[in-house]
Image 1 (tube, rainbow, N blue to C red):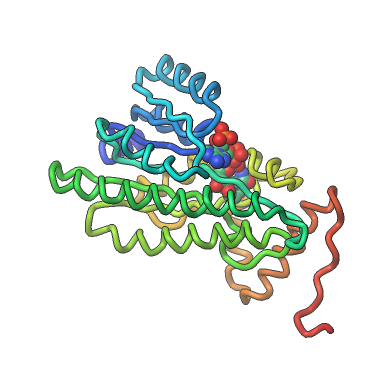
Image 2: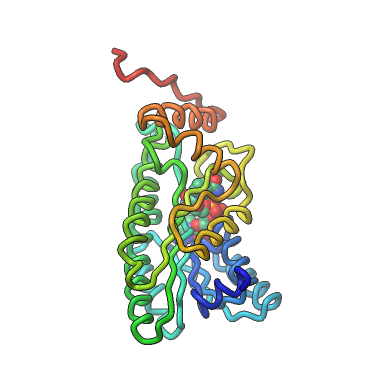
Length: 282
Ligand SMILES: NC(=O)c1ccc[n+]([C@@H]2O[C@H](COP(=O)([O-])OP(=O)(O)OC[C@H]3O[C@@H](n4cnc5c(N)ncnc54)[C@H](OP(=O)(O)O)[C@@H]3O)[C@@H](O)[C@H]2O)c1
């Protein structure tokens, strides 16, 4: 059985993808469409979603529904749910998200609060609503459900100069790890996908200079492969694998310092952040 057949058979006939207008979410949508799943496409930029929906319908003969929504708003999560109740959705890919970087003292509180809403509150709300739907779906038809929560390598320790972004991704990683074991009894497969730095929009929007890393397509491929093979934490892309394996054995504090230096390098084109002091320095 091919990966595409397994994806469609276990998680079809419909998948809902947030962040589908760009980057990793868009690449996930393209690969799911190629596997024959019908798609609900969610993001704010309707023209991009409409164009993608038309392209994927033509190329793969799938059905699509576009939901142009801002996930920072109070009613957006309920709307994703109610506007898809007539569809047999078996997979949620929660890829909408963004980051911020730079000195915490200079952060814009409104932008940080929006990031908390999109990266955490929306992920929580969608995971909860779709988990209930998948559990009910299994009771009636014995079909499985799946959930992909898009995290980041910054999730595994505090990260100076992206402290709040890392905190939002730690939330996502922890939520996914817990749900993976808890929801297994309901036949729901959960994937935490923590990409390393990559060539898609998150870095640009966060003001980070990212010159190398995995393509959105490679991240999507690695993430969906983990879904098909039973869930857990994906290591999508070569850089993600290298960074995960090299950082994992180190104490958490050492990882924070290393990631802080990496983030300092990625943000110094704007205003060079100060050197990190040792914890015992005055
Ligand atoms: N690429 C990387 O280097 C990397 C590394 C680690 C983790 N990640 C994570 O992977 C996910 C995707 O990143 P990406 O690089 O693919 O980012 P991207 O190219 O900037 O795409 C982000 C997607 O999220 C959507 N989005 C953002 N704010 C939204 C809002 N308020 N309401 C609805 N949709 C919203 C955007 O759509 P609209 O603008 O049309 O709303 C877009 O479709 C993020 O959670 C990111 O933190 C990425």
